[in-house]
Image (cartoon, rainbow, N blue to C red; front, top):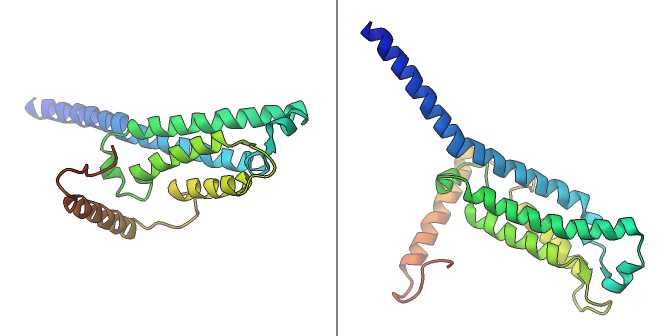
Length: 188
């Protein structure tokens, strides 16, 4: 009788711990990967919009469907940035997951969130005589987003990635230790 009870208790414990692990770690990681996939899809889908900009006055002369697409792109890139940030915040033990090649490091996700907001804010040209065309900046921004979110098609083996993250963390810790006592040791 005691063996059956121990087997049942062990089975239930394993089931409960597995569900806790799935709920607090695996599901949020999977959600982050889904949002990153949506970012990639929309960077490709709206490339013709953020790479070919018009002034606001020129945009008013465009067909209604194109104007709607510009507005949708503005809202969507901002929304994706917010969802990316929320998905990052939902992952318990994110610093541990960074050692895997499956998700980008937390700092890169934060940077990608800012880049998506920048892309959202630059859907129109100020005027035709802008010295640095926003089209070029937007295309470079989209490229940076892909690199930050590990969408640049580079193969990432587990151990080399683990070593790279470990070395970056150690260098950041050493840089933080070498700061004068009155300065903060990282982004605030």
